[in-house]
Length: 169
Image 1 (cartoon, helix red, strand yellow):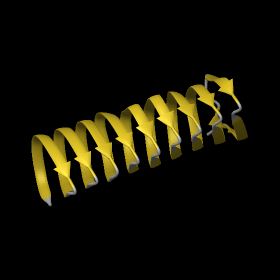
Image 2 (cartoon, rainbow, N blue to C red; image 1 turned 180 degrees about the horizontal axis):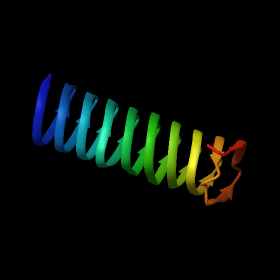
Image 3 (cartoon, rainbow, N blue to C red; image 1 turned 60 degrees about the vertical axis):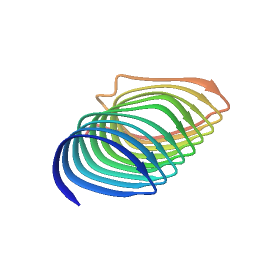
């Protein structure tokens, strides 16, 4: 386990990696287990692996295939392409998904979510600003919508949408 690393460019194949503090990381991972406590910026391509991040301080931009991912906190999280992933996300200020295909995603709290999805299942525990979604045959559940939520726009076919509670929190 590395304690503090300023910048890293890693090619990880069948690897285990654990770093506490990292300013900037460029990562290409294949069937690897990556554990990061605090990372400033992350750019990565990951296939068939696990990614566990406690906090992304600035931004993360990922391309993923069959990734099992958990991110506790992020200011800006961007998936340029994600397929067959399972994600557990904590508090995310802005989440952008250029393409999400057959992903299962559970999000504790998101302010802004913008994305395109096909055959996905998303559970959003709390939405606090805006949701813009293009979807095809996806299941989206929003458990709580705050008074600060400005806009929900969903454009698609054969989607199933469930919105449960509006809250003043």
